[in-house]
Image (cartoon, rainbow, N blue to C red; front, top):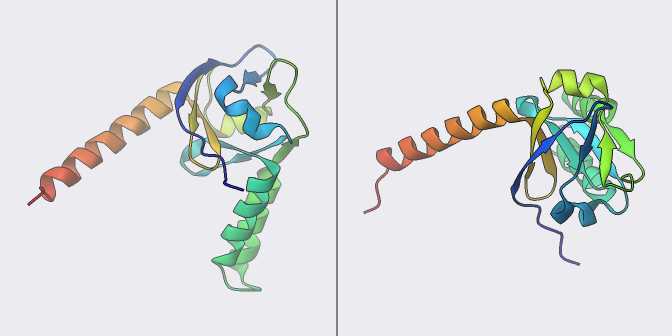
Length: 147
């Protein structure tokens, strides 16, 4: 079976109860539930159970068996994961306060498809990050023009 490809950028709003609606185009990927984790670059990651297991295995596989690094990788990913067995009837999850604080999240959020998972960003942080990526891409093209 082919793995789903999550793509797109969606502006959403966090409600007063810290609930965020997963965009309808992405929801079917989470019919078996969702794991939300703290990711790099101060965003949150949303994984289907199958993708979360795959992510954990991939992250651990790149480290040496029995190493401190392997233990740290497992601890960080597993300790920050929150499992939601299902989305609510409106396709929402309630994000823990510590996750929102970690991500510096305001009420204005952006959810992006990141191929095998989604990411939840504070909207201003995503806008700044995306602008930096675009600048770096432009600079790279300028440094390496096509022949």
